[in-house]
Image (tube, rainbow, N blue to C red; front, top):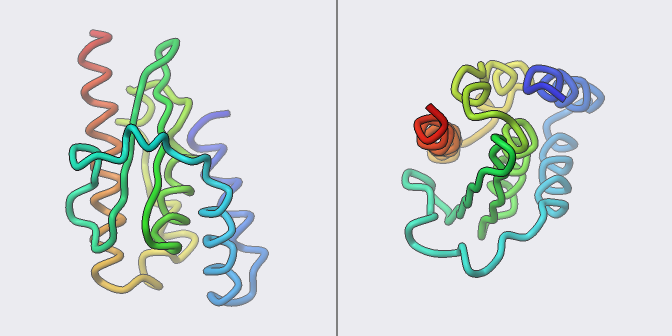
Length: 140
């Protein structure tokens, strides 16, 4: 599935909810479903800088596609990273680099986060794209 197709799927899912209480609950549920990151990767070097809570992200490339795993010590943040991983995992580095993230605005996520969480969201996207840039460089 393409990044764009996954983003449209997420937009459709969020549009089913009437209010932000339900959307937050859905994000929490997504976070609970996030496959656990191996404790081996819960290191200082895998923590995303700029997040209020701790968010660990690990990336590895298999068959020219990046597989992300992540975890967070905060339930909402875990839901946010779960959404991002759903969009970007199993994708080619170039597709991740070129991907637009306006779906975040379309589901209204940024406007319903505290300023520190919104900054954390930007940091998460930046870090996932940095992994993609590093892997794309290896492929070139």
